[in-house]
Length: 243
Image 1 (cartoon, rainbow, N blue to C red):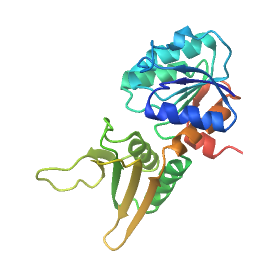
Image 2: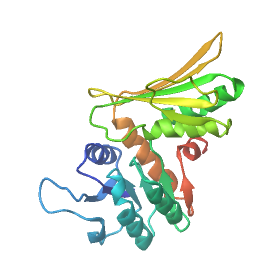
Image 3: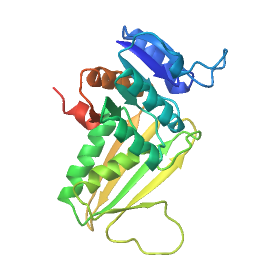
């Protein structure tokens, strides 16, 4: 594949470029507004041929990113987190005209965790459910996008559930709430745990990312998947269920 990487100078962007080249793909444009080695290299300056755009930049770039992909009719993989409701609406609108693969977490294992959590929650609808996520001390958004994916997956089978982010002060746990707690410490790549607890038993599900390489590899798999699709919004769930 011929790949455009947006956010190429960030930590994940650099890893993605290395993993892409190792896998035999060509990074034809390494775009980043904040290059340390010279002038900014913008998406709009690219004039060559490409098969897909992979975004590991910042959520605020959503408007420029979608405009470029639409103008060039290029499939788009968005692996950036922290999007606002307005930015998410823009991404959804974009997917009406081009294929867009959008996921807060490019790990297939995390997608499996979300699926298992929903299945387990459906079997224990009256259980107390808590989601705990841990990341490095430089992560700026909380709760993590993956925690939101897990919550949404559970809510797809238990729609009455509501999110309770953080827990402090006085108050009894509400029956239908799902607690979501965030830890920020050291260099933790990413850990997500789901606790499903009844009066007499507790089920614990856990996924741990041990290297950021897995997110880059997942993005490349998503790129290969979406490159052959028609317009639409695709997720890791679609990739996991594909043949």
